[in-house]
Length: 570
Image 1 (tube, helix red, strand yellow):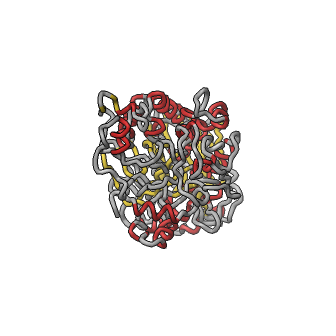
Image 2 (cartoon, helix red, strand yellow):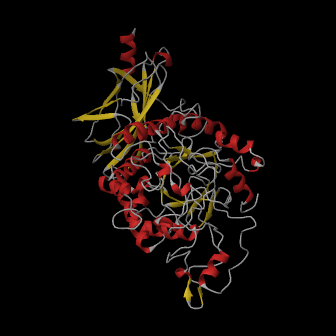
Image 3 (cartoon, one colour):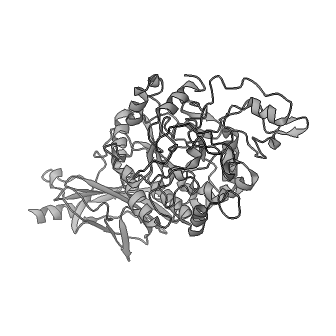
C-alpha cells in the first residue's frame, strides 16, 4: 500500500503557479490527505535578473522525526548562494536541505520552514519533485494550513504601521493596569524585548516569542497587526553602559548567531505568523558606541575598543539583518541613537557610513533594512518649540550654549528627518522610514516651560525654554522628572513611519545600587542618583531616580512619575 501511495504522489503533475509557487494537482479521490506522507510549499518570494529568494515549508504527516533532509533538483543553472534555518548543500543540480541543531525535531503533522538566496540565468524553472528523507512529497496547494486566520501579506508595504493595529503586550498591560491610574495607558502598544537567549522561550514562566505572536494573532482579527520586537543580545553588548551588559562575551558571535538569531528567525518564518507585520528593532546602542566611544576620544572605553577591533557588532547586526530580512513580513529597523548622541558633525556622517557597512555585512543588503529608530529607551524631546538651532542671543548662537554644545540638532524630530536624508545619501533605499520612541520624552507637568527663556545669555535662553529637563543630554538612566510622550501613531510627520513606545514605560533602565543577579546585568553608576558623572555626560550629576531595580524590572515610582508628567497630558 505504501509503495502504491508513493507512486501516486510521484506521478502528481506539478505546475508553476502565477505567484511563483510550486503547486500540486489534487490527489485522486482514493488518496486522502491523511495518506500524504509529507508536503512541501516552495515559494519564490523575490526575483531579479540574476537571482531570487525562496521560502520552503515542509510538513511531516508520517512518524515523528528527530532529524530530516529535504531534496530536490533544478532543471536549469540555479545555484544556492546562502540559506537560513537549514544546512543547504548542492551538487550539480541536486540540492539537499538538512535540519539545523535547533530544528531537527519534526512531529507528526508539524511543519518547519527555511529559506535561501540563489543565482540563475535564463529561466528560473520551479523544482518538480521533492523528497523528505527519501520519501516523495506532494506540494502544498496553499488552500489552508497557514494558520492565524489572516492573509499572506505578499510583498512588503512601504510603512508597516499604516492602516494597522499594534500589538498590546498583555504582560506589560497587566502591570500598567495594576498601577493607580494605569488603566489610562494600559491598552497602548509597547515593544517586546528579546534581551537574552532564554527570552525566546520565556523567562520565569513569562511569555516567550511564540506566545506573543499567538497573542498578536488573537488581537489581530481581520485587520492588519504590527508586532514590535527588540532584538538585543549582541556579544559584548552595550560596551559603554554596564546596566545593560548582556550575557554573551565579546567573542561569542557564534552563539549569537546559532542560539539567538537563528531560533528567532525560525519562529518568525513560521507560516502561521505570515499575516502579521513584524517590526524588529535591531540591537540598540551597539553601532553608535563604535562611533563615539572608541579610539582616542575622551569617551572611549576598553570594551568598545574591543568590539570595534573584533568586528562582532558589525557582523552580528549584518547577520541579524540578513536572516530576519529574508522573511517577507519582517521589517528591520536599525537603532540610530538619538540627537544628543550622534547629532554632532563628528558623529553624524560617520554613523551613517558605519550603518551602511553593517547593512552589507554577513550577506545582508540595504533591502533588508526598512528603516531606523531613534531615541530608543531614551528621553530626548520630540520637538523643542521655544528655540531653534538657528537662534542667537546677543550675537551668540544657540549652538554655543552649554546644553546644545555645538550640536546641529535640538530635538529628535529634526534629527530623525535629517539623518534619514543622510542615510539615503550613503546608499540606503529612498523609501526607508524612521521610528521615534516617544515612551518617555514628554517632559510635561508643572516644570514644562511655556515659552523661551530669558535673553540674558544664550544659556538662560536655552535652559529656560527647553522641554527636556535633564541635567545633561548624555544622561540616560531612569531620569527624574520625565513624562510619557506622544502616544503611538502611524505616519505622524514627513519621513517618520511611526511614533512608538518601544521601551515599555515603567521598566527600569538599571539599578540604583549593585544587585546580584543571573541576568548578566551589571551596575552602572549613571543609574546612581549620587553619581557626579563622567566624560560621556560632561561630568554632571546623573539625574537618576533612587531605589531603581535591575534593568527591565518593574519600577512603580518611575511609572507614576511618567504618568504625572505626561505630555500630551493624560
